[in-house]
Length: 316
Image (tube, rainbow, N blue to C red):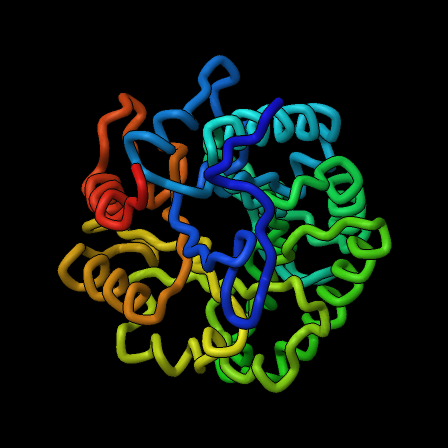
């Protein structure tokens, strides 16, 4: 398969993602766990053409990998091939929430809300197995590896832990990155900070040594605008920062409850002023905040995100 010229090899140079010698700002859509998407639909031409995205984030939950490894691998490959054929960069996201070999978020099944599972299985050996398999099977450098979706120890102390908590996670991300490089893989790696991928304070003092590494940031309406600059802590001046989750839903009961006026527009303006890459959560209508309803009609958030991407469309 010939890959489209719109999304070839991506590398990190200083604080930018670069294709060849041209800086690239990634803006696109998060799909959710790809095994939960319809198997008979290829959404990526629509995402590239109508949404004007240049990247998609494809997730696999730890529980999916543990219980349905072959299906997860084949489904992930199909979605990668479809997305790359549509001219999109791809982020592979290991959708863990918790602390390696420790706390894991309880998962409430979509179809059986009363059922709790270990879908966010936090065993580090499981994460290592995933990334070794991915590294050996996906060497196309238009694909980025997001090592761990949302690191969290689920303790109040982590909110003020800053660098101390980063230093607890950092050895795990170093081991994963070193193992990926030892396999011969050269893909860009994306690393998340503490506090559900929100707290970037202090990371500049102890960055990973791997040069082909960018950093992840998740920002929702529950994170107040007056905190954003302090929490980002100018990390974007040294390394690429990509917001791999953002979004809002008016009158939601979760932390993503917000509006375009109090969150969407201010945060979009903040990202633009800093030149941050971003991925809007989420294409799958079963996950909130969703861009689409089950009927395919766009939500208020979906309309906002689509207009944001259209505003930044280049050469389309």
